[in-house]
Image (cartoon, rainbow over all chains, first blue to last red; front, top):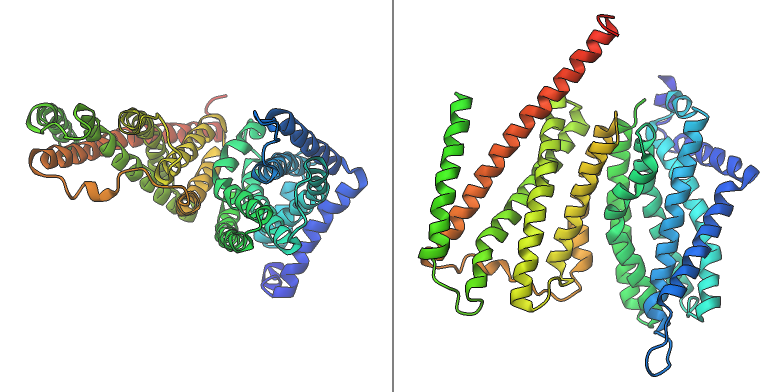
Length: 239
Length: 225
């Protein structure tokens, strides 16, 4: 119990969160399994999209890049993120370590936040590869407004990691979790994807005002689901 | 007493449905713009009412379940989730038939249509999780319902930038005479019908849960293998 009391202090709480996140990152940096597979998968998604959607119209012009590139980016990030989420939580299941985590004298919300931070970090690494790749392949103006790009990616990634970690955590003990994760995750993430795609799209079209509107929307989304996640994770993830 | 009330309401539904058919097809006048097509309105809008009642029932019971973790709230949530999928399907099908007649297209990416479709997808996900998640899935389903409830305003807000083709809700208060009677009677009867189906489904869900609990208790005490 003393552990629980100690954690109510802000600094102690943050230390718990970073301990969990650091644990996941250290395991990952030893094998680099999730990072390599996620990145490869995301690159492949971008390539498949370009084969599917990059066509010339009757006049011989290629489709406007700013209209499609944001969609490529976000769908690749989302798919790769789903992959990373199932894998990161599968590790806990395979090692049967989730019980250990839940028994440790730290609040459950700290476990959840630590996991979310680790997964967001994986996704940001993938994005660091995908964004230059889209710029490279499609000559998309990705770096016109670096601040908007960074804010949109950070907030969008945080949202996917928050909602994803809750559901992946709850799915840990259920059957057929790999198919059920997208089933529960994607409908909830639709507003986030719309905002992310619109924000990057507006940035490419040179309309920063619109981008900032969507960035504010992402802040609201993240805040709302962070509260919902902290509340539900505490009571729904039990062994 | 409760059983009698249930049968009385069921009888009311049967008689009322027959009467509304008469009202819809004979008493209510043909719409000047949409002609006979407008009749689907008496089925489409009540099913939307029921969908949203079911979603709200499911969401609130799930919030209560997350808070108190009592089985009875979970029974209501699961029954309402299934009914939301059923009535949502009716709403989407009748709606696209109406859309084809009114706009010439089966589907439009309008804010209200998109929100309803995504909400319906959340509920389909809810039922899938409950059906295929195995033991422990009711917790995940409750979490999904809570998140889905929080998501609705965000979905609506984020898709609203597209133009809105769907008739405004101001159509409903403007209804006159027999159209108005037929419409509101339909809505009320559909809602009563929803409550009846909900009550029935909650009964079976509770019986299933109690049976499962009894079986587990029996296993714990070594009464059977």
